[in-house]
Image (cartoon, rainbow, N blue to C red; front, top):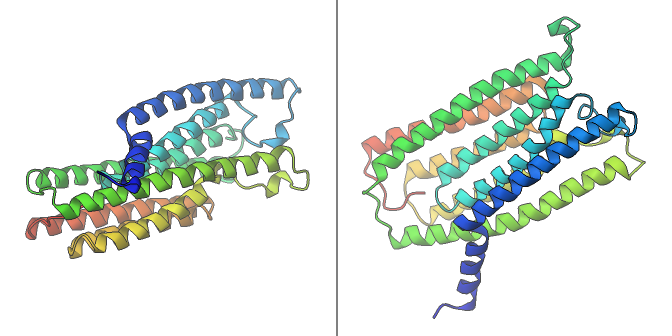
Length: 306
């Protein structure tokens, strides 16, 4: 008969990481995204009529195009859940979800950039126009890199199928990752509540803060989110030492940690440097996986992977 601790983790896993929960979360997020889109549009209309003060949200109430920013924000929340959902299944897929999230953050910023384009001036004399150009280019490059990353992972998975029996060590590692995923969901939920609550408090109620001093809305939650991801990635790396002796797997997981750290650093930068850091981070992750796959062609498969 399983103990109380085992029952707790099993029940928590069913409640937070089941396929049914994922489907319900998707429906809820879509509904909230549609409602948020409509509310944002109404606020833009009220702002144009002079009923609502637009200075509190610079760049987000100037143009109806900016209203797309809101549903994308909720889609990002669902992507965060999917990232944690896939953590017990595959570390590589978990890292891929991190790359998807940073790409969606970039696309969300593009909609904000679109609302601030100045087509009356010379394109290269406007900082907003230049940022839009950087973001467009980075989006195409990152989307391509994510495709390559998943392609490399699918080739690796095809090689592994039928050759990696579910050993006891592997099962223990999966259970450990499930526990970590459950803890991450709880931590990220409270982080999201705190981050957005603090932002809106500063935005509407704390008169001591000027608009310029308020944190960039595009970085809210996700700056701290990637800090937590770095810590969880390092923890996974340490745990993996007890489940595999494979040199290539240790280097691969270490490379993924470095990739996540570079993404985290991008939140403290602006302009072209921000895009360069993100592209470099994902490029590094792709190259690490590519070299890891080459190793698998010359070394026998381990009994414990991912």
